Amino acid sequence: MSLLSNITAATLAKDIRLEWRSKDAINSMLFFALLVVVVFSFSFDPLAEESRQIAGGLIWVSFLFAAVVALNQTWAREIRNQVLDAYRVSPAPANSLFLAKALGNFIFVAILEALMTPLFVMFYKLRPLGPAWQLIPIAALGTWALVVNGTFFAAMSLRTRAREIMLPLLLFPISIPALLAMVRSTTAILTGEESAKFWIVLLLAYDVVFTTGCLLLFETVLQAE
Amino acid sequence: MKKIFPILAILTAGLLSYALYEALIVAPTEQTMGDVQRIFYYHVPSAWTAFLLFTINFVASIVYLIRRNSRADAVAVVTAEVGVVFCTVVLVTGPLWARPVWGIWWTWDVRLTSTLVLWLIYVSYIMLRRFSTSGQTPVLAAALAVFGALDVPLVYFSIWYFRTQHPQPVIGGGGSIDPRMLHVLLINWLAFSCFAFLICWSRYRLERLQRDVEEMQSLESLLEPRSVR
Image (cartoon, rainbow over all chains, first blue to last red; front, side, top):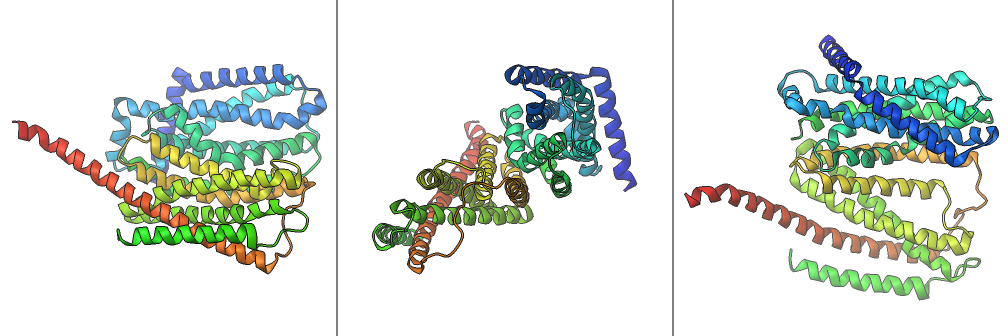
């Protein structure tokens, strides 16, 4: 267990250091999400009441698209200089690599969300009528739901042609229940009309099921060459 | 093997025509919906067949992940492809039936939406197989099939809750069914299953042959440079 956590910590620290110096993923995600927000607000221009109804969908769709940008870059840097091959032959457990990558993506997407949410609030004049603190567990669970499967499918789509387009094709159908839960719970809190409890529980179940699935199957997928 | 195939094909053709006759002529006309309801005998058997094939695909994928048996993988390819075809039939006949009866083409009801999501997952499965370049396609595809199966209950529950929160004006199905209709339905399902089995079988043979040919070709290309020298 300590070996697993040591390797995870080392890989995570390396990824964060790389990202800190290059800022590739964060910059492209931020700019992409910003473009989505601007285009959406042009095309809808909603009143405060309408924007409560649609903002949940807009926020999560823009985060999903932006997350795909980051997820596509996750493994790309490991392909250069055959780092991934070196990892395969090393005795380090595959799951520690997976966890480090997933946690790294989680941190990047969480930073994106923290920076973009104020913009959404500003552009769409949002003021939640429900219990706003529940947005924090929803954001955490929802982001994990996206990145855990996204990291896994990004590793899978490494071995396909048209790698960049393959990831959303695999990720979106599987993510439909999670996406529905994120959007509905956010809308429920913004409008304050219903409770978001069921959706939070569903997100939790989704996270548990797919985290387990990823950890069980990642080694198989990593070694597939 | 080769002798059984045409016999089975003729039997299936006979069964399908008998089922068609039963569905269009023998089955009683539904009171409120009229003749439109007869699409039921195609819609429901296709759905059952598609779900059966997807279940087989899931089992074959698990077997492949454990045993690395190439036959299991061939079964998985075949059932996914044929399953998507039957699922497409369901998704096309559904709106055709819904339009005259419910007055709408589509509603985001539990069963409709779950079937659509299942179809999307399996289309992405086929695309993964098509786009994958390495020799390890079966492993990746099997992993995706397992993920798809994990997703199904979550999809079902999420949409069930989504829709029970917002009741629909249309009420679909429920209640009892005329025993004669059930009889026709079961005959049609049997015919459809035989038909699906037949296609799967011939597709399976094709898949095996294709793999053999590929193997031979790669062996030959390995041998060739030596024979030239």
